Image (cartoon, rainbow, N blue to C red; front, side, top):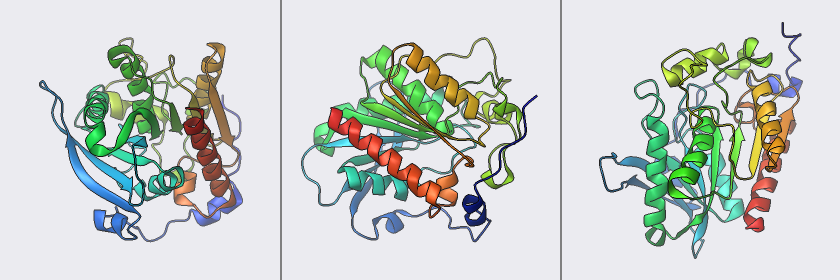
Length: 299
C-alpha cells in the first residue's frame, strides 16, 4: 500500500486556489505585444494522411534559420487546448531565439492512439520539406510535452528514429504519461484536489487507449521507454505519475542514455501553470530554460 501523501507546497496551495477562468487566448491575444509573428498553417504530405493544423510562431526580430520548439497537443485529459499555455512557451522561445510550432492533431477520445502520433509525424515531415519557407532549421528540433503530450513526444521520437532516421536534439517531458501499466505506488494514490487531474492514472490511459491499461498489444510508441535523445524529465512529488517518471529516467541511464530528472517536492501536475508566481514555479521554469540553452549550445 502507498504511504502517506506528502504535503502540498504551502505557497503553491495558496496561489493555486480557484479563481476566474482566463479562457483560451486568441491569436490576437498572443500577437498583442508584437514579439512574435504567428500564423495558422496546415501541415500536409503526399499520400492519404490528412492535413494537420499548426501554429507557426517566430520572434518578430529574429533572422536566419531558427531552431524549433515543437509542441504536440496532448493525447489525454491532462492538458488543455493547443493555445492554452502557448504564451509560456513563447517566452521560452524568445529567450532562446527559437521558433515554436504548436501542433493540433486529432486526439482522444474521438481518435485513439496512435492516430495523434501519426499526425505529429506528418507535421515533422512537413517541417523538413518546408524548412526554407518557414526559415527554420528542421535538424535542430526539441520536442516539448506536458502530460499526455509527453506521451506523444516520447513516441514521436521513436517514430522519427525508426521511420525517418531523424533524431531530435532533445525532448522535454513535463509530468509525462509514460507507462500504461500504472503499477506504481504513486499511481495508486488519488491526485491532489488542486491539480485538476484525472482521479487515477488508469482513467487517463483509458481516455487515450479506449481500453484497459496494460494491454499486451500496446506498442512502445504509445508507452515509450527506450531509444531516446537527451531527455529532460520533470514531475511533482505529489503527481500520480511520479514513480514511473523516475523509473523512466533510471532506464535511460541503465541504457547509457542522457537524462536529467527533477522531482519537485510539494508539487502537483501543472503546478507552475496554476501558480506561476510561486518560488518553486520560478525555480522550475529557470531550470527548464537552462537545460534548453545547454541542448541548443551543445549542437
